[in-house]
Length: 191
Image (cartoon, rainbow, N blue to C red; front, side, top):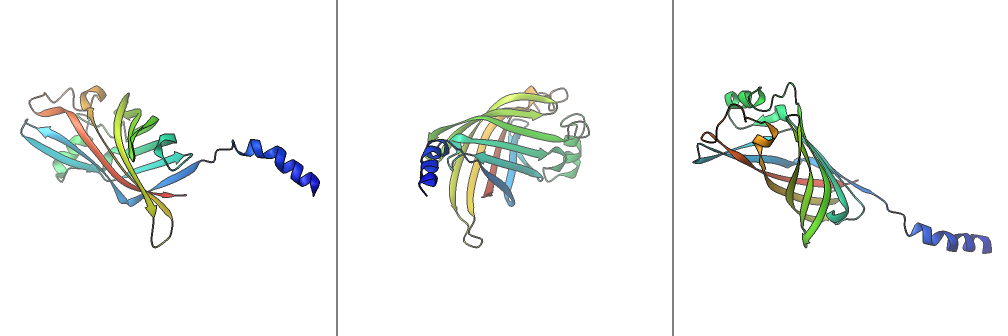
């Protein structure tokens, strides 16, 4: 018994430095990625990517120590106009045959205030990877039916589509704005 207590006492300092990662899996039935772009300088046209996936890996519930990975299937673009969607999937824009996915990987997350964060990371789209900074809010709770821990995360930001070569060669500023606003709302389940 004395040996067990001594072993436990010796191991305690090392155990206190053990960091366990927590994985949060996307609940796709409660998630949406939207975008908005200005058309002809007068109207905002909105759309979504219907097939998305994301994970959050964290050493705490606070997003400051988290890593976020996100993927969208470029073919799943939906602007409520099949003719426009086919054009967006083609070589003038996303060229989904050559570049089927859009990916984002965070590099750092900084807490701005309670529940609000600055997310820095790399966005890969249309064969180009560029740093992109986003704003995120996060709230946590317990699911009343399955008693699992859940997180609600909203991410927003603006990207310049021309930096990624999306529509840059075929569309001038008078037709589509360079800037595209993106907003993602998602629920994650703690695993």
